[in-house]
Image (cartoon, rainbow, N blue to C red; front, side):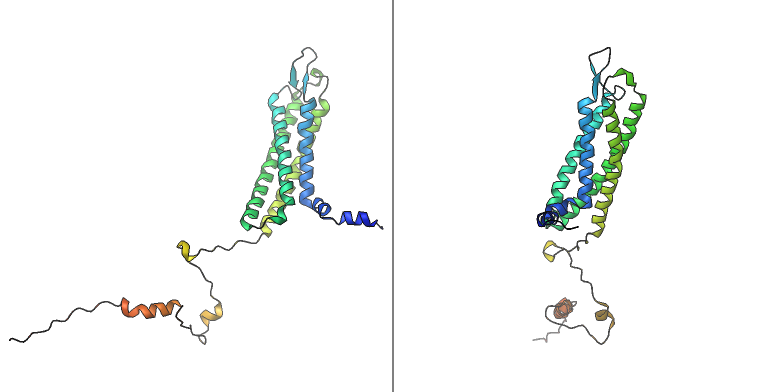
Length: 234
């Protein structure tokens, strides 16, 4: 299929390639699901009963259930936006330690959000099962949408945790070095040829440790006891 040149340039642009990444798609899906959860409960999640004008949560009149779903959905939506913005600037991050810390935080939050949405799905489904639909005129569709998208959020965040774990595993380890100025010891790995081959004797130069120890050996020997000399009688 032949595409126009303008569409081909758009498809090859950096923005489109960034949005087509699996990590970006999972973050966008997680953000959309979270937006649906807290927005549906904010709009129609609180209704009045037929005999009372007071607003109640449509999930078994349990305000904790609605508040938990709204708060978790809002925080999850913000988390997706923040990490999506950080992913866009990931190529500009030069510090290896900061990148590793970012990937570790991404993995931990993904695991936490997967557990949160699993608990939310079980809690919301239990409250909806015990609620009576005749008590409220509206709000059934909002409650069902919140429960459904809470369930869909679990595999999305599990997949996000898997991608973060892959990034952590593929990241090259940082070598641990300490300088002599900090009071540490530099560990040098010797090659097997230099340690086992007798044909290559260790060279001695003024900068080597053996030269220093040999040069200082006359001064490090045990001092000799003074000798007593007999003075002749005058």
